[in-house]
Length: 67
Length: 264
Image (cartoon, rainbow over all chains, first blue to last red):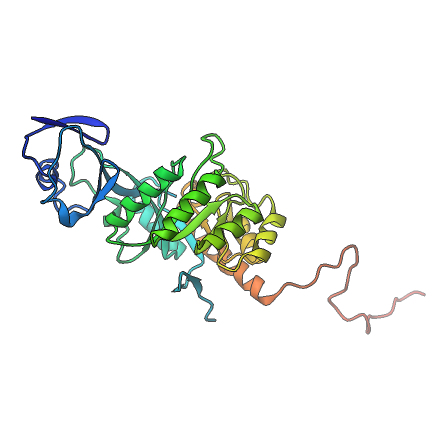
C-alpha cells in the first residue's frame, strides 16, 4: 500500500495505482476537474500513464461560484 | 450603435462582467446572469469535496461554458505562487482557456490587493501565454506597470471587495484612464446602479461586480438595473457631457418673449 494526500487528506491506495484508477475510484471519470501532482499540472490525457508514488500530494479542483 | 468591448482581440457586446458567487442556488445564479446580459462571468477554482456525491448539480450545468465566457479568478490567493498554480489548474480545467482574472490579496480584513505579488504573478502568467485581466489598487503607476507587463485589462478597485461603498476615488480612476491604453474595468466596490453609471461615465471600459447583484434583496431585478446603468453610463460617456458651469446658472428656456407684468 501507498499513501497519497488528496486535497490535504491522506488516502491509502494500492501500490500499482495510477491517476486514472484513482479518478475512477473517486467517481470523477468524465467530470470536469483539474489535477495537480506535487505542484505540477497533470493533463487529463496523461492520467492513465501517470503512476502514483507514496507521499504524492494531489490537488483536485473544480469551478465553483465566485466573484 | 456598434461599440464593442474589446479584450485581447475579442469583441464583447456587454460591458458588464459579473461574478457567480453568493447566490441562493444555481437557478438564481443563472436568472441573474441572464438579466445582467453579461457575457464574461467570473468563477472560482476550489478543491473538490471528496465526501460529496460527484453527481450533484454543478455550476457548469447552470452556467455552461459554451454560453458564457468563463473568467477563472484567484480569489483567496495571498502569494504570486498560489495564484499562478490556481490559474494553471483553471486552464487545464477549461481545456486551455487562457483568459483569466488575477487577484493576489494582501489582507483578509480589507481584501486589499498585494500589488508586489500581483506584479510578480502577472509576469509569470503573461510569459506562460495567459491573457491576464488584473485586479489591482487604484494606483496609476502600478496600473501602468501591469499594462507594460502585458496584462489585457486593468481592473482597479472602486472601493473594497464586497463593501458596496461605490466609487470612492474617481480622480485616481481618471489618472489610470489617462495612462493606460488597454480596457480599464472597475472591479469591486460597486453597490448600486448609479455607481456602475459613474464608472462608465468616467470612461471605464466596463464594470465587474458580484455582491452588488447577489447581495441585493432581489438579485435578478438588480442585475437588470446594473445592465441598464452600465449601458446608460457608457452612452453618456460617448455622448460627452455638458461642461459644468460652477455657480453660474443658464436658463433652458428663451430669455426673450416673457409676458410682461400686469402692474408696473
